[in-house]
Image 1: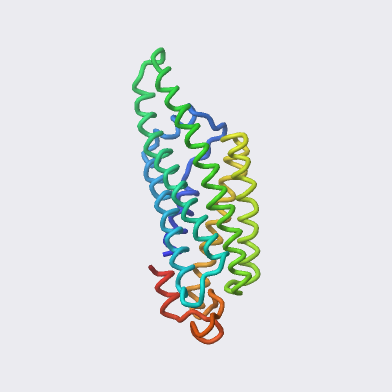
Image 2: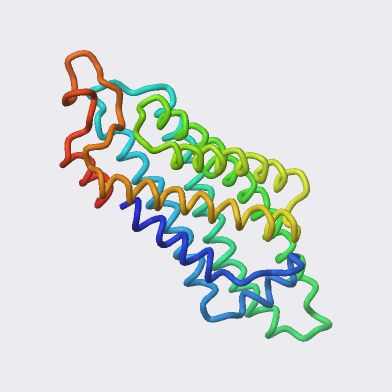
Length: 240
């Protein structure tokens, strides 16, 4: 499941057209593309699937006890994934609908459509900022804490998670502070989303290749030897 969600995000991130000068009206030009809605559908579904996969992963060994880091990671990724999915839906379907109206309206009568596009951009900016702060910032940092505590991932995977979380936090704050610009979107949000996606792909691949790997710490009288999740539990978590 984690691999499926991360793959959807990777494809959507790569296929998403680059807006060299982000603005309300420039997005209307991009939204005329036949693939615009499909791309955002992939992004929205990918965020929700990743969120669900992390929740299942974090609770795979509940009998061993749930740590504060696990709760934080789960809460942040569910909140961020939900906000991200709403953002993708508005940006995809809302912008596409406005783009059709924009190009069907005479130039002198485009004022109301442009106003609606500006309002949509303001809403999307808030959703993108808070979603990035939660999904790519807080959730990744909390996930890194869980990986360190449980020794569930390699040093490289943990380092990638910390990097994604740190950069995601900075990006989310920047989006909330200045809104969508060429820097915050093209030089910050897209690369951070790509790094987080690659991290999830690496985590999913690691669990598939090494299903005996640790996730939850050994609790009193619970779990298998050394706190290792059973092969079936981890396989079902990743495969969905």
